[in-house]
Length: 323
Image (cartoon, rainbow, N blue to C red; front, side):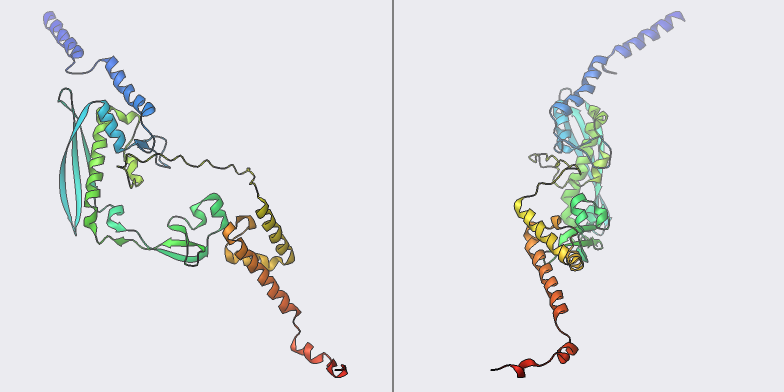
C-alpha cells in the first residue's frame, strides 16, 4: 500500500513538472507582462486600441492591435465562415478563428464572432433631417450639450438661408440595397472572431475588452495609416476671452443700440437666434447690426409721423406766404 502511494505521488510530481501540462511560473509571468509592455511601449490609441465614451476606462482591442499581439506571440490564424439565410436578402455570418503556434504548429485558441445584416446600422438607411423651425440657442455653441437642442435625434444644421437651425431625424427606412453590406458584415464578423481568439491566446483580457467596441461604429477600422487625433483641451469657464479692436467697436455699437431701444434690440436678436452680441459670428455682425438699426429707425418714423387728425388741425400757412 505504501509503495502505491509513493508511486502516485511520483506520477503527480511528473505531471506538475511536465511542460506538456502547464508552463512554468516565470514563463507565465513573462507572457502576462508581455501584453502590458506591448500596450504601453508600442500600441497607439485609436489605432491599436480605443476607448468608448461612457463605457469605463478599460480600452477595447482593435483589429490592428490584435494583429500586433499575434505577431509578438508568433500566432497564425485560420478562419472558417458559415452563412445563414435570414430571408428578404438578409444574412448572418458566423466566423470561427483558430490561432496556432507558428513554432510548434499546436492550436492555441479558438474565437467566435458573428454579424448580421439585421443589425440596425446595416439594416436601415440614415433618416433624413427635418427642420424644426427653431434657431440653435447660443448656449449650445458654448457647452455643446445635445439636451439644449432637444436631446438625442436633434442636431444643429444650416438651413437653405444659411441660418443655424435645429433639425430632427425622421423615421428609419429599410436599406433597399442590403447586398451592398455583405462584405462589410463579413469583415465585421471576422474581426470579432479574430479579436476574441487573440484575447484568449495571449491573456489580453487583463488589459483589453472587446464587447463594448460594437457600441461605437468604427467606420474605417482597417485604416492603419490613420493617426490618432488628440481631443481639443477644454477651456476653463473662468478663462477670459481676448477681444480685438474690431470686436470691441462692434460691441460698443451694439451697446448703443441696446441703450437706444431695448425692446427692439431684444426682439431682433431673438429672431436671429442670438442671446449675446459677443456670440454673433464675425461674418453676420453687419447683417444683425444693420437690421437692428433699420428696425429702430422704422419705429421712430412711425412715432414721429402725424396722424390724420393732427394733419387736419394743423393750420394751412401757405396762403400767408409771399411767393
